[in-house]
Image (cartoon, rainbow, N blue to C red; front, side):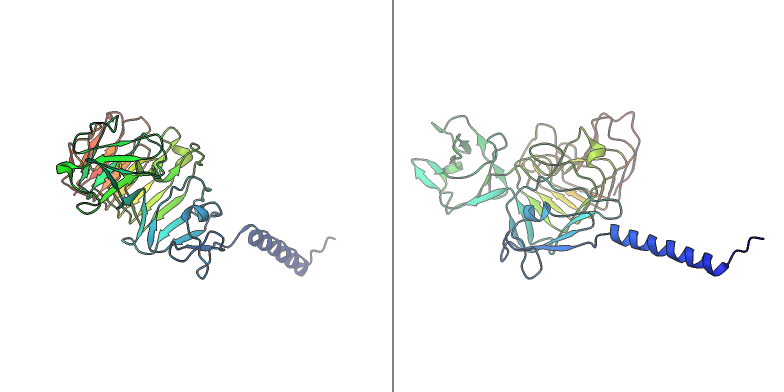
Amino acid sequence: MLIIRHDWIRKLISFYILIGIIITCASQVPARIYHVDIQRGSDEFPGSEELPFRTIGRASVILEPGDTVLIHPGVYHEQILGGKSGTENNPIVYQGTDREKVILRGSVLVKDWWPSGKIWIKSNLKPITSVNAFVMVDQKHMLKRVESPTNMPPGTFHLDAFGTYYIRLEKDANPNIDHDIEVYELDFAFNSGNRWGGTAKKWIKLSNMTIEKYGTYAVSTDWRHPSDNSNWELEGLIVRYNNAEGIFHCLDDWFVHDCIFIRNRGHGCQLNGARIFFTNNHCAENEWFGPYEDGGCGILIGPDDTAHSCIVRDNLFENNGAVSGLWLRDISRRTITQQLN
């Protein structure tokens, strides 16, 4: 007769439970918190609270799923191209410590123009490309670009192949004393896509910061691969004064909430993915610098077949451009649930 000893079975079960716990613990790396502080940091430091990194880009290359980087007040003049994806339960988080004071900025303020007749010149700048160049006056006007620095009319600028800006202001004003003049250097703050040396990324969260004055967009994603750049969360951002759209594009399963999209040159935000949840945002005064070639609205949904099943709810739209609030572009075959304030 076979006799089964229950104490032996209990020991065996306990053994397997212990092995499972050990394997689970070994596979889980504790989430880390890094710090970035442009005022007192260095990219040679380890990124701790006491010894923070200087740039967000330095932090981005070491972040693993579940990690958070806390960004301290200051103006960060940079583009974040690469980095890894998070996971559903362990997103990678970029979080500002003060929404008004943590500023990612693509332009530079110039106060040392030197005169040549009615033209003012600034050299030794570092525009990423000449294509997206702009000159912003007092956060209200954009100068018109011309092809030559010769015989420039008032209200125009020229950028040569060596990074030298030539400007002539209205009424031939002095840019060093009469106005605040900001010029383009960088295209976007965050990239998601296998392009321009960057990486496609999922499960990324951007929170509690201001992103402004980039040559194109605050956040730029590869719309041709929406599932590869899915599941981003944008929380509590201020996105303003960018030279095209604020966000281009939100893709599959993005969650955008409690943000302000204000005074961008084009749309505040473009949704071109599936199942995007866009709620409790404020979109105001987009198409700020005058008529934009693709129109200017609070948010644009479409125009591609990838845009469907989105929820747009409880948002505030005020004084946007040609299409004031929500523009549903070429989406007759798609389902959009909307409940707008």
